[in-house]
Image 1 (cartoon, rainbow, N blue to C red):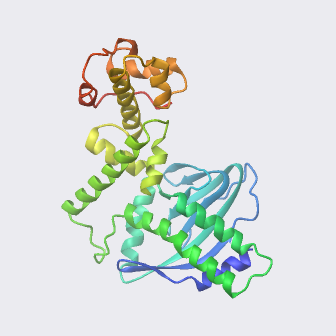
Image 2 (image 1 turned 90 degrees about the vertical axis):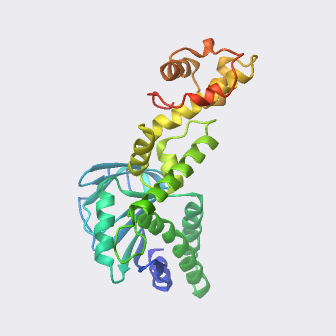
Image 3 (image 1 turned 135 degrees about the horizontal axis):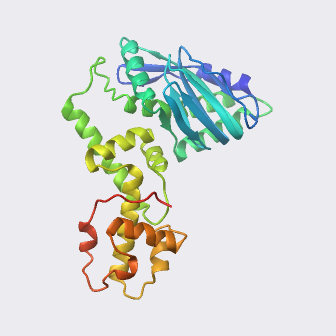
Length: 313
């Protein structure tokens, strides 16, 4: 299969973003199934490296410490010169790629992206990327691999790579402006747009126990970057914001419907255990859910927006 993937990579057109272009240099499916406990040594590459988990779970280590655990559908982009290693936590399959950046300001971009990576890594992954990766693997696994199959895999590869490269460009705050950092006003607008997207995702999922990693994945940024955005604006982490929104939604439900039981409000906001829900609710608002006044107006539930919530269940 790797032979066919390499053939497809050779046909894949360069991906141009701003004043840079990215050319696939190598593509492989990691040596079958990597067994639990497998580790790579700490190493670097001269090109950008993408590691994407097809199944299983893998811990990523950087010179600055652990980035986190990649699960199926998660990917990470590692810039040239960044020391890193992988540890397989459960039997895993990886799709890997090396990408060469080209352009007048390649050195500046590599330096910027490496600095951003050392703060937490550039992670990516969404439903489209997962579908493209699966289709690419299936097409490359055909018994007969001809021109049509190579063209199909090359097209899917280009779509899949764009997801990771866009995350990399966004994380490095690169605007294609000859290597200059975007103005303070532009950066502020970018951060506001990301926060709004994050909040929209959190509100839309207040009925379930999402994690900060889920929000970061939806935005194609690292969890550390997401937390920096939230601390700067709200003086709380993304996890705390998720919990606050879930509990505010629960209080709104209790306020609006006098017949609603506490266990129903807990279930409607993703809490499986009523006792834990009550604990978090008291910690957030200073009183238990049983003391919510059913006659108070719902807008009051909107006014109390900050606190120090417990981790989401």
